[in-house]
Image (cartoon, rainbow, N blue to C red; front, side, top):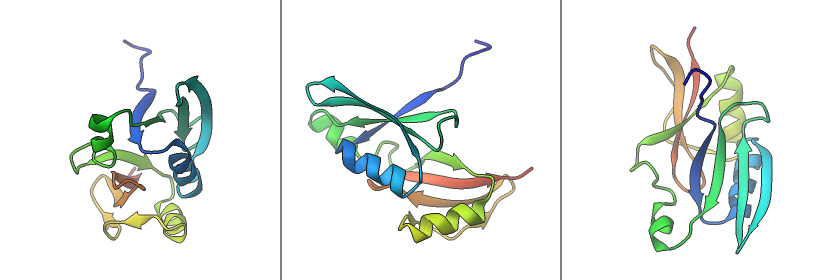
Length: 131
């Protein structure tokens, strides 16, 4: 699969508009698509920018089983990794926008990193890789 790539990852949410607002206003993501699919479902894609590579599909929970997963998609582990070329800048912007960080920035052998949570409590790493 020489030309394959992971393009989109699903994030189960409780409400399309609330999720769109959080990802676009708090993280500054771009809304790439918001297409009605019928029966109350929508195809909603967000990403750090239009040409950022991987995207998030914000999928509204359908039924109790999916609703139970909102905010706990990875069992409490960091499940999403947002790379930046300027950690200090983006960390300060996120704090100013009310993003909740679970820790102070730390300097690891691979990156400067800090864990934050999205509006549902899913854990993310904000990181600036070294080298």
